[in-house]
Amino acid sequence: MTGMRAELRRGRLAAEIVVAYLRARRELRRAPIETVVERLRERGPAVGTQPAEGLREARNLGYAVGKAVRFLPGDTRCLRRSLVLLQLLARRGISAELVIGTRTEPDFLAHAWVEHEGQPVLPPGDDSFGRLVAL
Image 1 (spheres, rainbow, N blue to C red):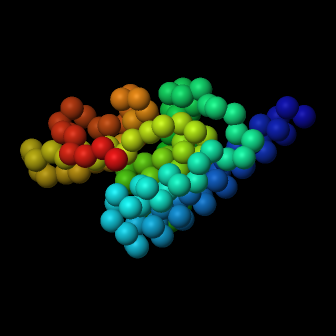
Image 2 (tube, rainbow, N blue to C red; image 1 turned 30 degrees about the horizontal axis):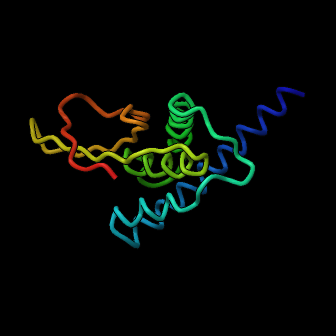
């Protein structure tokens, strides 16, 4: 019975990730990133949700998001992954920031990741990315 409950929880989380991904895609087509982040955070904690354990829970969710979005169509790179995770964390009452960084050498490249209380939840890339903005 315990195995069935775990499978049900994983299935629910996978469904939540898919819905969050579709919402992030839709919002990115409609508005600037600042507005998108604000809208995705609007749905506060889910009804009946207990306060989460913070960084450990955030990293576990980040791991699940990273694994699940690989199977979804479209662009599932860092920005979309980060927006999906922001939504899941907001629903659980866990504070988080979307961080966008850039580097110029050897080539220009941008990267997005999520932090909880200053600690990376999704990989921040290597040390060559300078923080551009945190939302």
